[in-house]
Image (cartoon, rainbow, N blue to C red):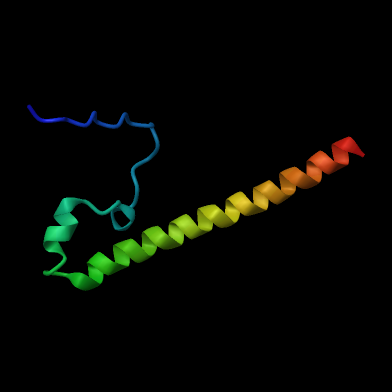
Length: 72
């Protein structure tokens, strides 16, 4: 009997641009056919994650400033 992972529920978020889709096993199989496209997908994912981290850091700093203003 196989251990089947449950499918993820849809979040209702709009679908990603095809260039921003996460890599799947199909992408790994097609990597030999088009390594530039394969690598660019990962590069875009990394840049997207970096931008989220930057936003998170900025919001965290803003939250700290607001907390200090409230406690003053």
